[in-house]
Length: 421
Image (cartoon, rainbow, N blue to C red; front, side):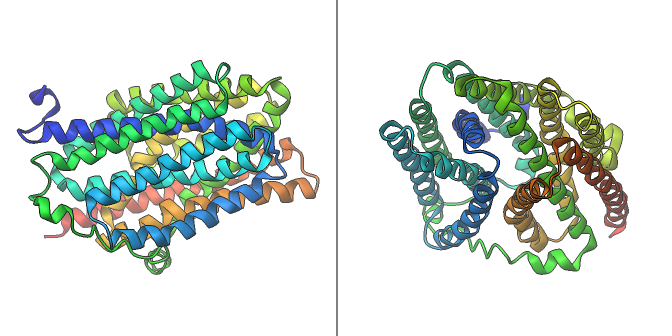
């Protein structure tokens, strides 16, 4: 097995612990995801923009205590503290759903919490993992660790599929809490192995790093057209995702008769996405990116948006919407996201850790919020779902131009980088 996966003598234990930790993290999240989406449907399209705004505010506010903790806690303590904090939150939510099943604000707060939880737990995991692995080790092992996460997403989706119509929400939340605790246990044991950039046991208890302010990447972002267009790619993706999310809520409200049925359908969608993504990640992603290049890989999502929103503007059916959502998410995880990471291999270290951090957190949620409030504006001026879909076609066309520009610029920067002595 060492030869097959290119493991070296000391790497297998830490690889297994980190892979299992990521498996349990995404398993936990994908049990919660269909519950969150169902609660979003229940709360209605009028309330969702406020929930998106609350999510953005929560992410900005939580960044400050997180930055403070990285300056006060060592690696072991940081992982254990943050993961246990979210686990306790899940248990408290389970108690609230059990005690007050009809209290609408419990569902709304949970919607915001899950949206924040996903971003922070995954970010924390990768920050600590990058701190543990060297660059060369990461190139060989990070792909397989990501596959462990995809397997966890599949497992969580399967659990949700088989329990959504038979267990109440609080029971599913407790199952999710169990897997998050398993992620804590396996993640903590990464540091018990004889591995990790020559870091001694004593150094593991020293403070992690100065994570910096959430807004520290703004200066570099606005000074570089390359970074600015990279940010635009993410921003347009999140806006069009919001357009499609609201279309989904509108159609699902009338297409399915019960909460359990909607939750089960959402879980099956997650399962399909994760299974297809895992297959592509393992067997085809690298080959396809090599074949069609960075530009070709970047335009996959905008081109799909042109076709999908165009079809929805004439035929807004539940079957097509489900297929569009599934294909879009598969292309995002299998092609667009890894290709976006390639773009950042050609920027400075400061921009990687500051501008990129800003894009992946605040900018991502800002796009969600803008899309949500645009949806409210469209409803206020009387636009129907078909007209909103046509707007999605126009935005996707801009996105396509942005992707072509980025691909060409990446090719130029790549040539310059290779020519440097």
